[in-house]
Image (cartoon, rainbow, N blue to C red):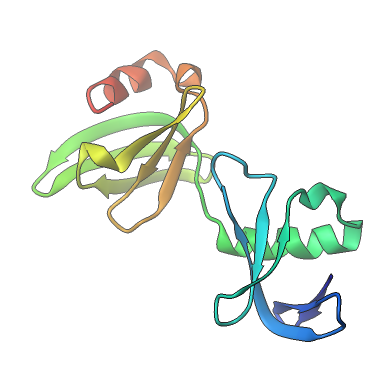
Length: 150
């Protein structure tokens, strides 16, 4: 298996030498195993390959894969919870993330999912995921705001 650039996308040359264009990588466990298990999917969504540990790839292959994954996976990390306010159809969260301050809305408390080891993922109304890598690393006020909903 070999990944090759295909314009702004990727192509895969499989073990039989067949070239598959417009492939896309997909992290199988983006929150619990972010550095392992990447599926390479065809344009129609068929799995063509599965990479258990991308770190074992040659450097050029890993760079291509990492660049393609970075385009697909947007998971801001919450550093502080500045405010949570009730809204007509849920709660508006004002947070500081690794990408700056933002506001998002969650519809129910079921939008907050524990991942184990003190980690949480929050899905907003639009489907964007926000990660809290370790609840205990949040400042006291952020933890207090979070306790009401989790």
